[in-house]
Length: 127
Ligand code: TYD
Image (cartoon, rainbow, N blue to C red; front, top):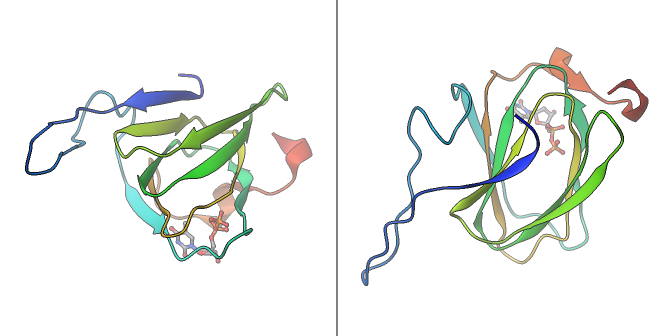
């Protein structure tokens, strides 16, 4: 599956909306790890690497930020995430960094693998 925005179910309710993820579509992998990034100071960027075998989905649970991706063919795209019912799917070997975080931005990451430093690709020429 290529880099793409996934739309999650949204249960609209006058008491507040609800979105959920569970095993199966639209998550194209078994979730093995969840982490989140928060309290990002203005002007900072995160990421700046790819993964060898890890699939990931990034969700702006709160606030907004941009994810700049580059696939193994060198195609660059900038995705602006600002809704908690959209997720950005990134296959392995996708170079990415996140920037332009709003105040109180909360980025949720769903990963197909447990944390492994050995899975990181830190040289942009190696993807
Ligand atoms: P890193 O993935 O480099 O952050 P980012 O890509 O968002 O800039 O991780 C930063 C540090 O946190 C690094 O020392 C490894 C550690 N870390 C874990 O221990 N477990 C994890 O699941 C993650 C994502 C990072």
